[in-house]
Length: 392
Image (cartoon, rainbow, N blue to C red; front, side, top):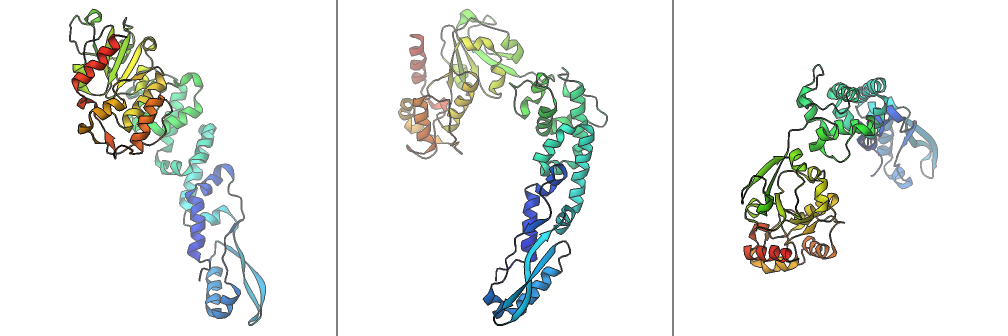
C-alpha cells in the first residue's frame, strides 16, 4: 500500500533542506508558507479491503504535531459516511525545521545572516546562493568576515599574506579558505582592486594584490647568439618577473612538458624553449613580447595533451602544435601507452586537424585510451620536424 507515511513526509521536507530552500527562507522568504505536502491517500477499494489499516494510518498522521491535517467527509458505498485525510500542510518555517530536527541549524544560519547584514550586507546574496555551504562554515564565518573587511580596507596591499595583521587570524587560516574568500571578495571589492587575469585558488595572492612567492621559469636559449649567461648549453631559471622583463630578440618560442625533451631539444635559430611543468599559463600571459613570437607547444598525444594545448591558446591564440599529429602517432604505434583517465569535453580552440585527432582519441576509434608520451617520439623524428621549421 503506497499511502503517504510520516517518513515520506519527512523526506519531502528534507529535500527542501537539502536544496537550501529552508535556509534560504532567512534571506529571501522562500519557500512561502503555508506549504502543502504531497499526500497519497487510499483508493476506494483499499478503504473497504483494509479499513483497519486505514484507521491506523489516519491516527498516525494525526499525531504529527508539526503538521496540519485537513479532513473531508467521504461517502463509501459499503462503509457509508467517513472522514478521511484530504491534504496536509506545514504552516510555518519553524514547524518545517522542527519536523526534520533542524531547528538548531536553522537558528545558527539565522545568526550568520544577522551578523552579515550588520557587517557587510552585500554578502547576504552569497548566503542566499550557498546556504548549506555557509552553514558548514558557521564556526569560521566571523573570521571570514574579518578577513574580508580587512582586505576591503587595505585593497591590493602589496604584502605577503603572512603580514596580514588581524587579531586571532593567521595566514594559514586565509590560505586554507582562499576558495570561499575569493567568492566573497569578488562580491564586495571594486573592480580596480581585482586583477581578473588571475583565477583559481592558486592565484589568490595575485588576484587581490598580495605579494606572491616568486614562481620560476626554466628555459634554454636554442641560439648561442641570444645567450643569457654566455654559454652554449645554458639551462636558466628565472623568477617570473625577471623573465617577463627579458624581451629577447627571438622569433620562435617552444614549450615542452618533458624535462629530457627540454634538455635535448635541437639548437634552432632565434629561438628558446621553456620547460612547461609546474605552473599555469596565467604567468606567461603577462609576457607581451611573446605575442610577437611564433609559439609551438609539444605535449603528449592524448586527450589531456590536447586539453593543455587548448588552455594555452586561451592566452596565446596563435600557438601551434608540434609533433602532436596523426602521422607521428601512427609512426610510433609500437610505443603507445594507456591514458589512465581521458577528458572528453569539447575543446573549442583546436584546429580542424587537431580536433579530428582529438575526437579519435576521446572516442577510442583507433584503440582504447591511447597515449603516446612525448619522450617516446624518436629523436630523428624530432630533429626532422625542427629542421623543417628552420627552413621556413
